[in-house]
Image (cartoon, rainbow, N blue to C red; front, side, top):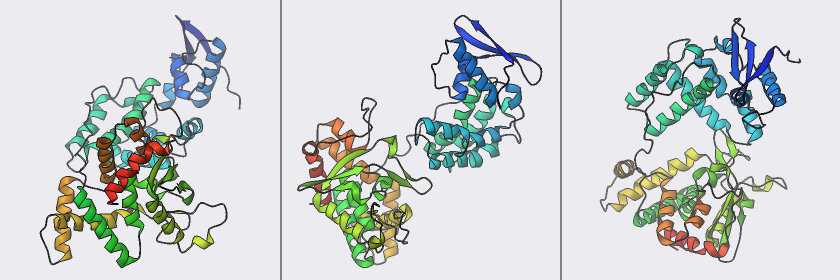
Length: 422
């Protein structure tokens, strides 16, 4: 249905404004530039031409973003829920303009944060038009006072809360900036620990014993690949056979996707694909794991078989992160206990000792990435190369796909070999 034009345009200086009557009968004026931002205008902002200003106002009326009175009956909870709805218009349009800019996993986490940590600490049925800096500060204070929520998580919760409110303020739906009283929160948290070379060697020994006992090499090869490349766990378990290109001395790994339980396959962190190199002996182990999949013969021609296939037999889903983390943690605890030189008769005592060391030093599976970057950073002088292979791209690196020269990457392959004890 065509929108009826019941507004007029006027200028203040070089800025266009829309004059109209609100639903409650008040004569209102709104900045065309702010309306353009609110509707996701694809043209130039600030809007300079009258014809374009007219189009912006018509679209704003069609979407109802121009009239604050229309939104006055909307509660904060409704507004925030709609904002983080992955199937809603806002995220749909954003992903249409910038594919994969907001994943279903990210939107879901933000929606959960709102539901669990924000809404319960706001006045019931608080209207969006009535939200104030005091309301936002009250939620922040509650989170900071909680002893069960990490600082990094608090930052994410407040981001889920304040980003939509800032836009509501810019659109004139809220009378003042609700975030103006907020203090910054240091989200650095506890420093990530990394295993020593001795501890890592003991970890590999434990994983080898576990692989022989269970007949499953998934966790062993995840750890080897993470430690020798700095790849993230989601990137590793998302690998397909086509990502491995065999070479004589070194083999190439193309990192083009990642995996999460809620989001499924998605772009790697930073939306940037990249390449790295590993010893060819490790590449052959990965291919052997891929081909050991009981369903390998059933894979249709043209499909890319998963290297880290699902233990449960699901053909299109990789092995679960929970499975990998559980076995990694078990073997790590045993390795950390062994590194102390103290002997225990019972496995449970070894696990208890090792877990206390692991928790105290904050060592997790992501520590393998830190270990690789630390070792590589101190061994080579090419910082740009290191950023390329681990996916820490800066603003100057504008290529959507980063190619690494095999010759230049050989020192990094040597570092990976030394970590693996080859």
